[in-house]
Image (cartoon, rainbow, N blue to C red; front, side, top):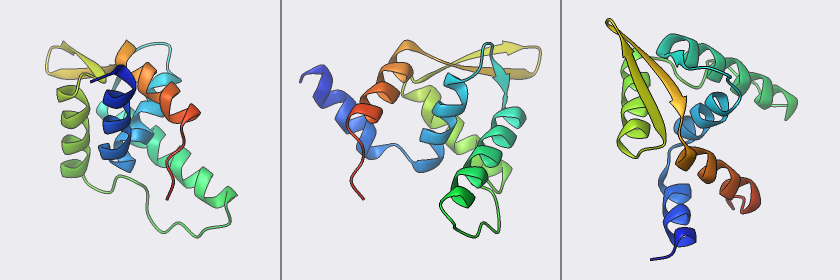
Length: 111
C-alpha cells in the first residue's frame, strides 16, 4: 500500500467532525483542550455554512459524547497528539494529520 492509498482511505473514512477538528488544530500554535476545540470547530463550521448561505440551527458538535468519540478516533488513528496535564487533555495535530489535510486540499472529496 502506498502513502497515497493510505491517505485516501483516511480521507474517505474520517468523519466530517474529525476533519473540522484537524483544520482547527492545524491553525493553533499550541495544544488546546477539548472544550476549546469544540468551541472553535463549532464557530468555524457555523461561519463557513453561513457563507454558503445555509441556515445553521446548531453547531457541528452538540454533545460531550460526540466530542469524546471524535477526539478518541483522531487520537487512535495517530492524527492528533494528546498531552495530559493533571486531568486535562490537550490536543495538537501530528505530522500525519498535517499530511492528511494537505492531501485533502489537493484531492477534494467529491460529494
